[in-house]
Image (tube, rainbow, N blue to C red; front, side, top):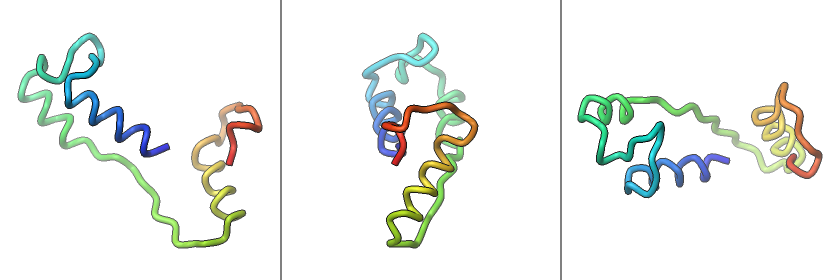
Amino acid sequence: DGQQRLTAIEKYWKDEFPVLGYRWSEITEVDRRGFRQTGFGHKLVNSLDEQFLRDTYNRLNFSGVAHDDAERA
């Protein structure tokens, strides 16, 4: 999940696609600075218990949103 988000940010920085109609090279330095200062939430889980990790992943990513069982860990 996080890898997809990081890949999308990297591709945006490389001007590979626009966001809201603008490529990275087209936005102002003020907007770039604001983007760079945006925090990205994350969780660090120290466990090797597979069921715990699956349950945690599902709770963090699917709470309150309907998904197919195939989309869950």
